[in-house]
Length: 598
Image (cartoon, rainbow, N blue to C red):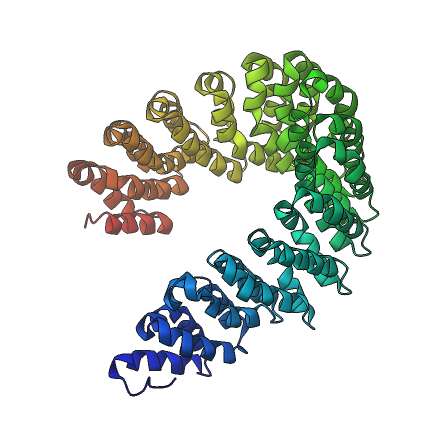
């Protein structure tokens, strides 16, 4: 760069510019990320006259370098002298908007959209709009796809003559020979419609929308569905039936499942856009068909919208529409062969109870909840359990317990240990939904029973479960409800149950965090209640119990005061360190070392 080498103050800039030419991609990338530093040091004039032409001439780099450059230039307005000179940034960004790599082009378009707002109306027509036209009529499809993202940002601020040219360019791109260009145009159709005058929406956009929605490529047709939402919100109600609905009906029955999926995915937005009357006459039957679609992906997308669709139905006949038209489809989906469909439905079905009320929930919805609660798919069960509070608000905890709790208890005692394990994982969530009183009355015994399950994975999970329950219900609950029961197992004839006490004491170490938050004397609980039980178990006849005593002491040791450590813990660990069993000796010595009792 001219003069850079002769000026000592610009030496670091010369180094950075050399890095831009370096063979090492990482060095070039680092230099691009420091462009603002280079520009600040050069000053606005040299940035405009030297740095930007240099960057424009050297745009043939690795994609990651070009991506960083496209992003940097979007923030360069003040570095080239402010809005008056912002058009100087257009040449390098125009080059970047034509490269082959999609992410680079998208970033360049994003930066162009950003700096378009900083152009004055005059500069927009003199500099920016010609760039858009050049891109729109470029030989390569890459430039034409980039142009599609720029029409809407300049259209509102140019003269009527230029607006007519822009509309013509957009029409041309909507019928481009290259599917990628038509895709780009379809993706921006709704956005462009929003900045057009209503007359042109009716005369131009509707015909383009109809054409794109009938395109031979399903990837173009599905993007037209997305544009339908924006177009429908712009039109008066009386025009929707004739201008939009024929195309929307066609899309809802499209031969490609991807197009039908897009209709299902956008259904709530379409419903709001077309209003209650068209919803009742057209969208209810369409929604029924989507819920019964032959493709699981479409059914899942529609199932996910069930609650939202029902909420947005006109109030005067909402219940009748749901009970007559929607609920029969929902009942079929509960036993769908695809787990993603069932899972999507389970995530929203509980919300129907607040819409349908107590009687309908008890009679029609509870059997469906019950079926899903017993579903073989864990995600379906989780989605039901995690939304129990919706039903609880409508029918009350007693009714809920009579209907659903027996199913939960049944799963909790299932012969297959993996099913029991799944329910344990949901128990903290369930506890949060039901509250402490109900939990103690109905589920506490179940949680304690898991601690002595014959499968180790269940016992371990049950211990972790206790930790999470304490976090939910607090230290006082743990002190009164959990700790006595856990410590009571220390005298159980079964050594595995005695081991559970030690596991719990080790895990009850977690209490320190919770108890600390509650301001409860954790050290006192540990010293007076847990420590004596753990120390007593050091004389256990089973070696596995003895070495777990050493491990437990190592974990709860940091909570104890120095007196308890020296007078109570140290003698027991020293005795265990000379045990006849090698594992007991090892863990005792490790505990002594960690607790620094030597």
